[in-house]
Length: 569
Image: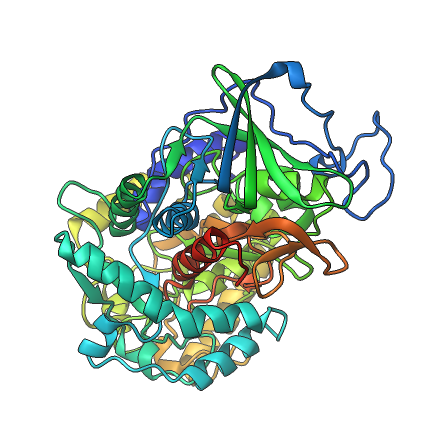
């Protein structure tokens, strides 16, 4: 069997849907495909150059955002629709914006290239909503902001962050009232004691998460955020929003340096020209399934063999392409990848007493490369840049005893038994798939993994020395989380990293107005959700559970209301 599992990107995108259920993020099964012409490009009416303003030859091989397509001829337009507010993309942010604008009296249109809306997960990040107040949950805003500045190295727009932090409570109170009146219970999320008490910004979690439902998903398998958005989509229709699925935005409309006035979209029946009097909101998601953009702005994420975000082919950077074709800038700072380990023995998942599964972890050179008790996302960020983006957890025949020392509860983070026939069977399945190896010697284990045996054995010897002395001279692991590797058979479990979402969006200001690369706002164009740049960098912040969904709801509602009145935030 090939020691490194290989498949083309399309193949692992499809495979990610299976892994998704384990990650607890199920939403739509996939996108229904691109209607109309199937084009993935849009109009550069006001631009004919690269994202950096340099002219691009029409026959040059360039990135998609540097090569605006020709305008769609007027004689191919089969319908013209006038509205006040146009929202492109029916994820959480787009659906909330449509409902909010329609409720405020605007003639509102929401278009989406897939066959229905998309939503996933179970947490919504909020500060000071009524459910939190009723539950006695308090959040130190100043400390949370300080920690957020630290983990983002002051690279994010704190104006955007402050709007979410200061407005999310009142925004969510509206939806709590409306949703609970329709029978959806809302409760404050729970935190592990270690995460709540931590004073380390990398492991601290503030109690920002709420969810609509007593469990993460309903009895029929629908995750609570999907349930929440399904209800809000219904409210949007009741409030008069015109929602059109299988309608793919192709080109934004902008004359020269003027405002964005609408877009042209493709449908099964031809092209539709949408005119938007008050503004266009881009809510098309991030760049998770755009390989060009990943390789340009998120190289480690481009190497992963698991994409867990749904809908498949939904987050292809359409909003960035369309925006940049008419002169918009992209996020100036680095992207933020949300990734989680998904091997049967991967470490980094903290239990209530602060321990985790912390087997020695090595790369294909046989070298340790990360402090093994790091949070799961941090393990992935360390693993993805390694040779072949591979990391391996190493343990021995004493794993059943040692794993219970690591996590005395006997349960993993999904609540399943750490030692069981089911887990042993999963080991055997992973061995068959080449995701785990078992050998009677360290040399045999190294050969199976495809790494130099001498270097691997030397690393094991050093590690065992740290276990004996209680002093990890390489990564300062606590003595109680070091477990010797000295009793055959020996095991190696591949630490596969599943990328949930890559957040990299358009350059926006604190009003969520899309700007050019010189920070000059483009009239009539806005971005929210993961298409909104400058809010997160480096990694999804586990410091603030649910913040991504929380900003979708907060900015969706605030911007929808503002544009309905012809105003800005």
